[in-house]
Length: 97
Ligand SMILES: [Zn+2]
Image (tube, rainbow, N blue to C red):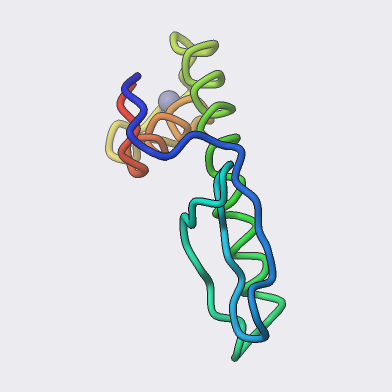
């Protein structure tokens, strides 16, 4: 896998009254979410973004550990089993397998 994103861990910090900041080690800013309209939802979005490196690792483990296992029955509706969903999510995120 060629990792092109900033390595984790990423954390969230309230930065001012109106936004949440997602940062990597060393304080590098990954993203910000505005919290001026819905603080709860935007804080949850920030936590989800901050968990991305861990989610990638978990999905890679699932994808690789269960690579031969697939329950997708209908070829017209692929990605209905967890390993296939993991691979699709990784591809969506631009992570090469
Ligand atoms: Zn499948």
